[in-house]
Image 1 (spheres, rainbow, N blue to C red):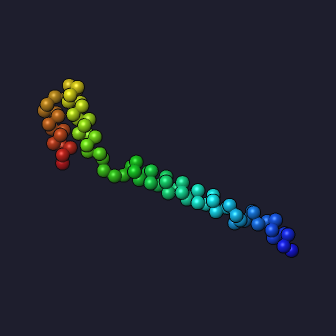
Image 2 (cartoon, rainbow, N blue to C red):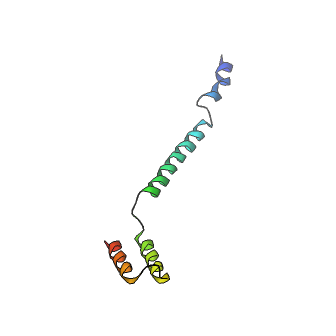
Image 3 (cartoon, rainbow, N blue to C red):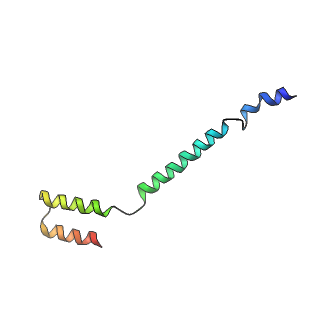
Length: 75
């Protein structure tokens, strides 16, 4: 009977069910992208140089340590 088939339609792959699938996979993809950016990639060398300059300007490190660290960062 058609009535029995129609009443069970929303429990299966009915209208709107695909929305949850799209949301689920979108969240998975966004999580992978976020993790890849967090753990991968190259370190930002310009921020390392800036931090080194700031430490030297505040007097936290001397000129020899500044030069040695700068050379290490340039490699």
